[in-house]
Image 1 (spheres, helix red, strand yellow):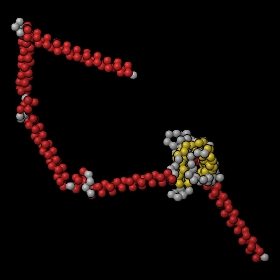
Image 2 (image 1 turned 120 degrees about the vertical axis):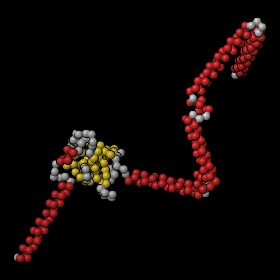
Image 3 (image 1 turned 180 degrees about the vertical axis):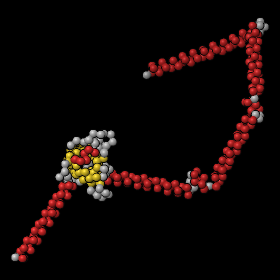
Image 4 (image 1 turned 60 degrees about the vertical axis):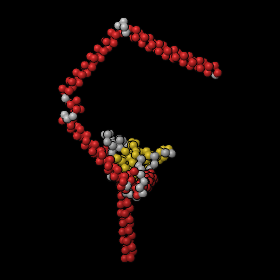
Length: 294
């Protein structure tokens, strides 16, 4: 009898512990999957889910707010993901929210992350479709890293070639660094430039101080008046000379000379015009001949 009661007691404890574990498991799983609370659904379209699976978590501001309920194909290049989210967080998710797929740690499970919008103040409705942002896939990242490594290799090779050229004295830059004679030539040229700059500076100072004829010509007001007066006299003399020549043309003693000179100039002008007319006729005749041959 005692053995039977002891057996029943153990069996009862086993059943009670099993029920407690079962209820606890149902509770925690249901809480994790939002089976007991009020929920709503959202949808988002992606070109690729990047390994996301049904049951993975949905996060908003770093907090798990729901799960991925369903993943369906729309076309061969489009997939729609249905999300089940706690009703209590719906007031924080706006119409311009963006969904993206991320990883839970470096090698962890995939999670769907909802980022809050910036412009809209309208809260999402049940079964709304929110925008999505395609995450960078590992393959694309590896391709980018490989390209960067290749570029680094090319740059390293070019630096090695540049160093080799410098060490072997090829090129002007190498000569500038290693050739003493070439360096001295550059130094001499720089010294000459410095001397020229110094001389020009002295010239400028002398100009500003009024030394020398050129300075007086530029800055002396009296010298300027003398030059203006000289130019005026030259203009007057030129005008008088023109008047004398015109008067000589009308003098009966010199009139014949000027008439002969004018006739000679007119004859030369007529000869030039006749020559141009002859050349033009030749060109016209040549053009007509070529047209006839064609």
